[in-house]
Image (cartoon, rainbow, N blue to C red; front, side, top):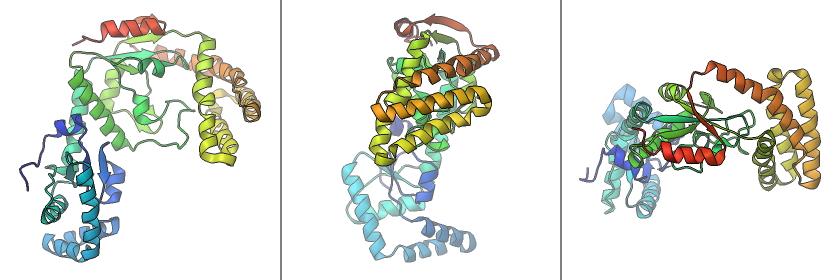
Length: 369
């Protein structure tokens, strides 16, 4: 163990220190940290075999089996990968699950090659516990203000024009609606989502200790990611500001965000299959809310979107989506928002256009503690 080994988890996350995760891939996939890279000392099968041995025969037998499974060739390969990481990120740390045998073994093998690299005391488990605790503390300490507005108001666009914000939808890689997934339908695991949220809140408290935090009005679930109970409860109790936007402006924002900008991505990724993939995504997303729309309205919008898709593929123009989007807003999203508004007890403290909202945020959020 070197003198550089640390349990200063706050500095690790505030400074975005590179992290070498030597756990097995299956562990890494379940949960890790934004700046971590998985270079395992054991693969999944090796880890399982050693774990079984440990339970049946104890630590000494498990260590012996590990030395047998990780032969000279595998050890050389691992050392090569670790050494490359160390050279690339000399300011980093390594960790395993508890900062125990795997971390120390990795560190010792590197030291035998003349390479000293610090480990994180307590490993993944301690860092994960720290982030969960900090997330609770953030929910308790950070004053929150909620940016509300009708669907298509461009709340995320406005949010990202101020420094006093965390973009929950950006962290979840989802726009928060039935049409909100990206081209690859990728979202972080729930653990990774919580880790990222906690780190962003920790950084916010560090950089803006006296400021309030602007968050977009969200349901508890953003795609497949779920807001922690304490954080969501704080959001529900926070005051809100309302972004005003005319209907045709909202239609244009949705057209640009969901059709004009998305279609070229499908063309680029799927080439000849782009039309089929984009149609499946759009009409499939619409079908998921068919019951809530009702049969007649669903058929109207589905027919409108189908024609709009044909026009888009033939001309590259997305303007024919406006009719279907307008129907969705007026007949579905706006009534749903009004219904939800009645069930929420947030205090509305300001309402205005985009420039007015940004000016209000700059004046009122810089000091709220």
